[in-house]
Image (cartoon, rainbow, N blue to C red; front, side, top):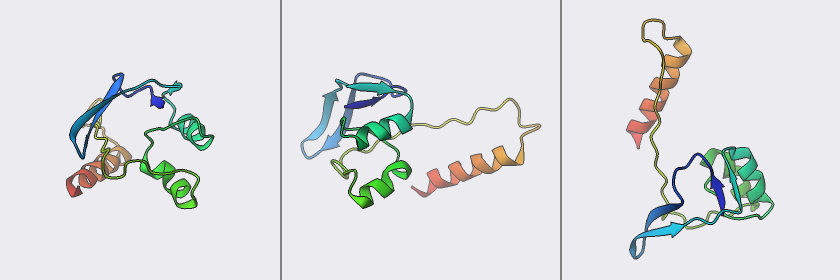
Length: 106
């Protein structure tokens, strides 16, 4: 298992055919860098939770395989933190609006 170090905990739970199951992690590599985990997965070092945008081409080309499609749904929270709305730049406002709209569509 390739472990994303920013993901809290030493295990993860998912809903499968037999209800909720918990898997204990025993990572061979722990990193907070998605690119490093991506490269390690491409070299066959183990399973990794990676963002869809990062692996789409590799899955299509057969370099990586989606394991347990439809069973592992990773959800997290994204917070936008900024000092004040008073001087919020257009770029930040656009990003916040984009993320909020994408979340409402799901």
